[in-house]
Length: 418
Image 1 (tube, rainbow, N blue to C red):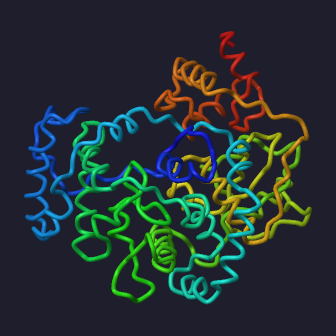
Image 2 (spheres, rainbow, N blue to C red):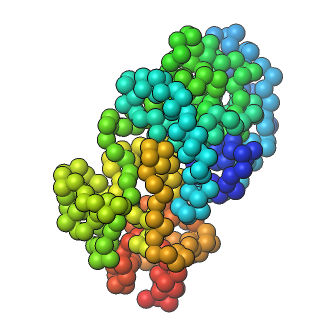
Image 3 (cartoon, rainbow, N blue to C red):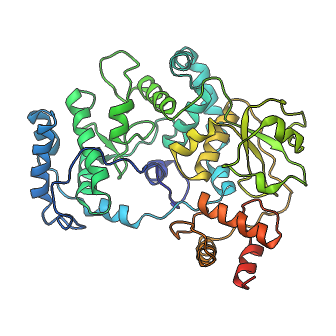
């Protein structure tokens, strides 16, 4: 599930933004390219020949010739889709920027209303999969505004074009094969298989491979329809979340108060301590009450550094980062779920503006960190886990509070060669 810096988010832009946020890195699976590496590219030359070979592969994997013909005959290469994929920007918004727009009051209220209106359905889903309604409607609201904006591009043409392009050919050939299997099973037709440019489908923006592997017929009509059936879509999302490791009845995120003398270097998603230990450090619940002195493992998350809001996140929070590996998206989704479940708005922190590095400044910071021997991964302007870890190490070296949050002061110190 992908990152993006596309503008967020008017209603008419939901599908495009969802596409930019929701393309995961998948195992290519068993679909072989059957082509030398140079037999693909960012133009249509050779596309028809490759597609003819792919049709034969699909039939060999058990897809009926009738389905293959109905789905792929007449499909043409879409250079615009490939250009969009190659030119997409990374997801570099801060938690405040993203959550202020996306965790909107109307999503909170509509999410609660949908649960109340369909309580029996949500209860049945939770009983079977263990996933509460608040978590489901959080993803539902962020991905498609509860099914209102799912995209209208020809999914088969988009996925076939991306399967031909060299950049992520194997991944999208897996998606194209899954799309054919979905049609062959009778769930969708080529005409109803429509969505954003990158091939996601339905009310939760599943890629075809996820649709095929985790889709559930929950309304009992004999088809898995994640586009038109809300029960199918919700149950399928719950099935996927369960597969990602959701623990029934366990929390995922709660706001906390942290003391000014907290060992800031312990505020790290990779560090999980019992709640009793966080309580000994002086961490309390947002309302001031004590944390339970138990052994439930938890991490302190400071998405805007020590001056911003603070959260205690539990093992179930990992599901949000698996759904989308952007920490900003994952934290916002978990916070939206908490708000739907009844949590109040978070405390914005110290009351003064928290500095946010621009994308170009983060790129400069990443280059300086790499020059000091750190390995932040791709230099892309995203403050991901590797960048945050390197920031913490440098903060500790410089005697700064090691909250893993990149600041202008840290950037200035590294520029000066300190």
